[in-house]
Image 1 (cartoon, each protein chain N blue to C red):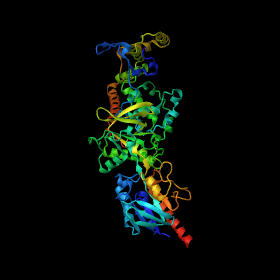
Image 2 (image 1 turned 135 degrees about the vertical axis):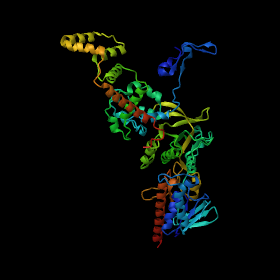
Image 3 (image 1 turned 90 degrees about the vertical axis):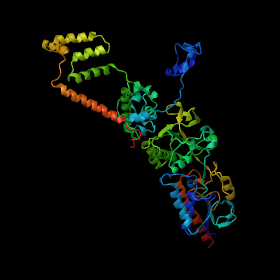
Length: 349
Length: 249
């Protein structure tokens, strides 16, 4: 029986799973395809995380350090798993750097890919420099300056468009990405903090700042930071002769078409299944659900399970997920992996 | 009429010039009929801030458009054009032109406060209706009515003399509202008064009409009253010039 757990992906979920398994005394092999640990919050340059408000590099930095400091965690960066054979309790994984790993179970913490706004050309991304994504605004906030990319001016008005790459049958994305509403209201506040003269408008169909995010983000953004919420799904972003952007759509509360000038338009991009999911499914022999995320086993008694025994999945690999919940799931999967290995050991004994 | 669909278009969006020559071609009359676009082309973000400086409307920006106010509204039950939820939205986005379309009904709020009682975000819609009515009046969008003219004449006399003279109020009111000074009902009233009131009293009234008596020592008191009213108006204006970013709750 192998006393090693293979964790794939070193984002919030993977780092949490690795730390959990390591703390229980088993060995961990952590495989990360990027050159840095920390996952999307680090690789995409997020500013302050929701809901803690802590800088991504500090919060993720602590998670990374905890894993790096653990003597029983072996880390492979810039590495992928290319082959997995065997069964629960006795897997053999082949890595792209040539090494092989004998492990008892596998935790997939392979995360998501940001929706690529180029797939909604009518909203101007790729055509106009001042149309950006929430990821880019995160980077602006991290750098401490909100400016229009075209000429560096401070925007008088910013429009944040929700549900870009979410809830859209046209482009085969029928899911809600869950966190964009909260992230957008948070960004609206951060924009206002850095640039008090900027008016921020959020164009929405629904506001889904679920649970405790309601008053901490949505209400606070509206009541203290004067974010304007406009009920309209924007149809098109174009440019007016004076160089400003025009957002076109229907304001369903006044039942009128709108063509409103803006200085910057922000796409609140959703979470796509990881673009590597077809490869991940093939290598690990797990199923994908209809949207392309890793398919979940029956959750009540097979928590964190996939369609293959001994392989668990956590975080945004399973569908749009928050950082906090990904971290909790990482711990849950660690528990599953360790408990299942113990059960196998007892069975063999 | 060339455009038979005109009935489908708000009349204020149809423009026709009686006399117009374009490139030497006479297009007077219906030939130059233009339909203004229906879309909204901008927000006036200062407008919401301005309305917020009126007492009662401080929380207007909190609205999330649930419609509880309109649903609970006493006036809405009688007239479905009376829609506080909609006007609050227009206020927050600064869609002033659309708000002005309803200037003749906004003030009909009866202040029952059911909306304020039910509002889940503590917007206090009743206060917003009051604020909008005050703004409309201040900007001159509320036409002078007989009752407002009467009020002005009445308070004007109080400012001036510390008292009102019934007959002078009536006569000035008739004048300002272009009414005959001797409507039949007024003659009848006067006749009956002459029949039943003592002659001394009537003479008193007549004399007062000519000599405009003032309340004793009204000079100083009137000054204090005028000063107080001026201070109150100034205080309201001070609030109204609040800087754009000073409004963190």
